Length: 110
Image (cartoon, rainbow, N blue to C red; front, side):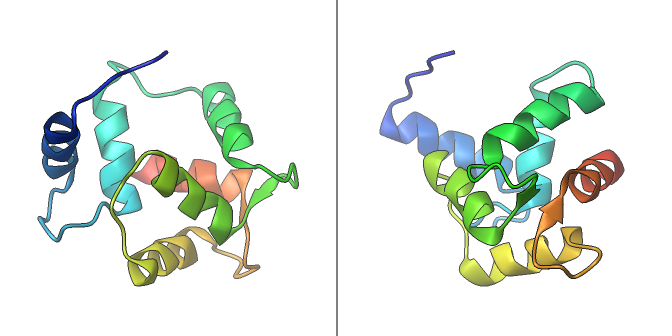
């Protein structure tokens, strides 16, 4: 799917996602925005595909750089501090990596 947006359309889209109006899109806002675009929840297999696309080094886990790359590619404004806080919330075992199970569990509760 190839989508073309003008700069002002992208800015308006980002503002509509930023629910707390802090100028940054946190992971909850990101997931809610894209969940709202679908009339149904993504299946575990579909989420596995999303996770695999994010897992650039094929390690079966996400590091913070891979998550940050998603934000950068989607041109989503974020703060490093907010990204670290979100990452730490998802990384339940404090391994420094997000496993698919941690990713899935987090998506399921939001």
